[in-house]
Length: 327
Image (cartoon, rainbow, N blue to C red; front, side, top):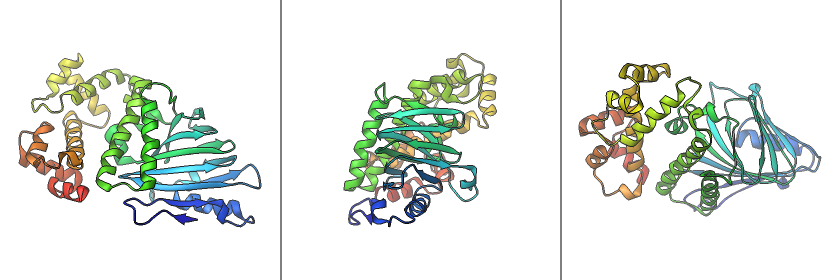
């Protein structure tokens, strides 16, 4: 086991079974896997089992390259302690070999280039063939829900990386992993991390459409409404009435649709504006912009209101947020 170059802007931890004695190797590898990645049972098919984990980070994301011989990795309800563990989601990119991934009632076969989506807070199983390689992009719950309000909608679903935007997303993920291995500056890493998540979610949206809006009969209508909000987010005149008209429903129906999802129209718009503002503040290309200019760019016409609501969401002022992310 060893670490990457600690002088780099990012550090990659490296673990492999070659450093373990043959007796008790499976148990020792289970301990490494569970302590560094997620509590699970790794069950090899053969006695001469070999595996490796390279673990790094990209901004708020985790990135893991997992190489292994034939085995099954199972995470059961007994492994999951919701009170102690932050919920994490993973985009699973099959680099080589083949995997049979199962979560809930969904079972997919992943071949080189394919992608699936795993909810680490729910039981799942992954059966890997010989010389299988995967790249995991691990996304914390609070980051994931900025892009996808209902992650459960794509849990266990497969993307074919040779189709649509998914090919771009997987290529970007692999390229960023190589940069993580070489060392990447934190300010750029954070911007790239959010672009990567956005690209993967866009890939799923392209493939699964209105199903992304959650298990509601009005999912297609909700998708039209949120698409309109995203298009008009910079307009300070964005309103429930205008959104309802553009969506083809009444204002009352629009408000009720958000309430059914445990949300509100105003709350949703505010979060989208603040998340966009946060992306600007941590983006080096916006370094020369004032806080006022950032506020106006996301639809606020009152800088004091922007400062208050930003502090309420992120716990710091916009200026302090920028300084912490860019320095």
